[in-house]
Amino acid sequence: MTIRVLSDVLISQIAAGEVVERPAAALKEILENSLDAGATGIQIDLEQGGIKRIRVADNGGGIARDELALALTRHATSKIASLADLEQVASLGFRGEALASIAAIARVQLTSRSADAEHAWAVQAEGGRLDAPAPAARATGTTIDIQDLFFNTPARRKFLKTEATEYAHCAETVRRLALANPQVSFTLSHNGRTQLRLNAEPAYARIRQVLGEAFEQNSVAVEAAAGVLRVSGWVIRPSAATGSRDNQHVFVNGRYVRDKLIVHALKEAYRDVLHHQLNPAYCLFIELPPDLVDVNVHPAKTEIRFRDSRGVHQFLFHAVERLLSAPADVTVAASGASQASPQPAWVAPRQTAMPLQVNEAMAFYAPLQGAGVRGQDSEGLVAPVAQSLPEPGQGDAPPLGYALAQLHGVYVLAQNMQGLVLVDMHAAHERVVYEKLKTALDARAVPAQTLLIPVALTVDARDVAEISPHLDQLAGIGFELSVTSPTSVAVRSVPWLLKDADPVELTRAVLAEIAEFGVARLLAERRNELLATLACHGAVRANRRLTLPEMNALLREMEATERAGQCNHGRPTWFQVSLGELDAMFMRGR
Image (cartoon, rainbow, N blue to C red; front, side):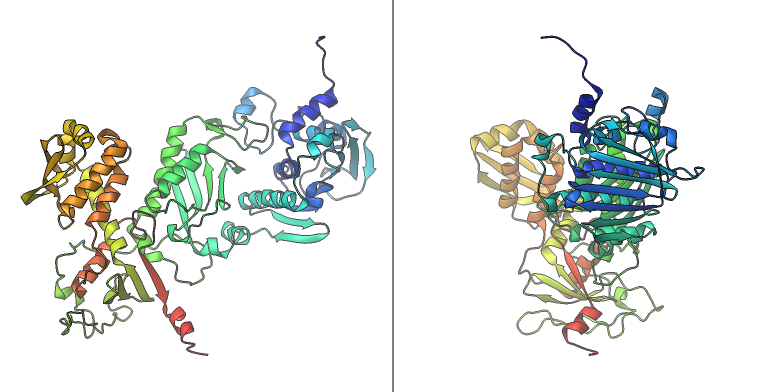
């Protein structure tokens, strides 16, 4: 076979396979050019999902007559001129191949007028063939009209989806760029009907317009910096997470990216507070010097590489994890009240942590009018107490309020300034115990409770063989075990925080985890999973009747505990029902 040089048209058509996967990819490249040109208003018109036509008009700086043909030529760009420019690139586009690739597989008309030109000029291209520029009429800016995408590559056209699907991808592309550029107005129409109109507005207003009020009302503002790294934006509260991955948007220096490292960092940040079937929603903007990130990885420019990937991962993980773990997060559950914009979580005063078994000092309730704890009634049930919250300015009421009663031995009912608080006592206490175990283990000070009488239990011989070399490590987390035979062990102590749990069930749970993962891995990478299992066994069980002081002690513990809004499995621990919602239930004021 003879080696030959391919024609420029064929080269552009081959390149188009990477750059222009579908209409949305072509639209993305054009919109990025408009933004790079400084446009403050962009009009997008689509027909048949962008397959029949994509027309984009902007009010940017425009293109001079002599450069119109170059704009449709491969590897011609105004963004970079040297390798140094490439390593410092800050513009969205820079490769100089998108328009040429589009012109090779579609009928294109490019009309533009620069600020100092007397009138506009237009150039047409069809299948890679360019016509000479001709005079045209339009204001300063650029209009690019793409028709019959893939008309000369029918094999590629067959891979396109339905009109509705292709339009959905195009609309998502517009929304992503709109999120990163709230100072720019966007108008999107499809088949002659306006589908989206976004005016230039503040970032939080653009978030509401694009991601919806539900995201706005249930999100928390993120703002963190470390050296040259900075992240800002919004993340969803764990209690509002859903199974969808649609609202996951990350921008690096204004560029929308899909990066596994970033996704993993955010997933890890939510790991302790999110149920495994749910996914977080977020809109984050990461900023760092251009030379610390390589955007020249793929023609689509959605894949990137960080120079210090581990540093970025840790920075992002800690920024979001600290926000989600703040005790104040407990105080801001969804109450149904609309806010003008997502605001940082209100920081409540920390409460003194109290063990669940210890009664609180009655002086704690002194500010309450008519406060008191009644005894149990003849059936042993806790009698409800009529407590009132302090008047505004007469003292600070705790965020979760004061306990009123226990419902079906499962839920604690409390009254706070907003209305009624419903607490799942097992889930809430599970989180409290879990966080205490983590703190104790981090400090290498897990207190143990020696059993008055050691508990013997029969176990599998493989479990005995597995734990025998690691008895000292298990003692470090509060478990003192001794091997009494090839198939039995004796439990001599358990972690003090779990002293009320069944030692046999507790030990069997630990041995089950050891059998699956091994001691070394369990105490290292799966440490938190082990502690979550222990906390579940040590938490107060359903149908245990609590006294009012015990219920209030649990509420105070929750207010002082990180991530107290969710249990270790990601389930919510409490809900707020506002007075407005209660009034609506009973049609008060109507």
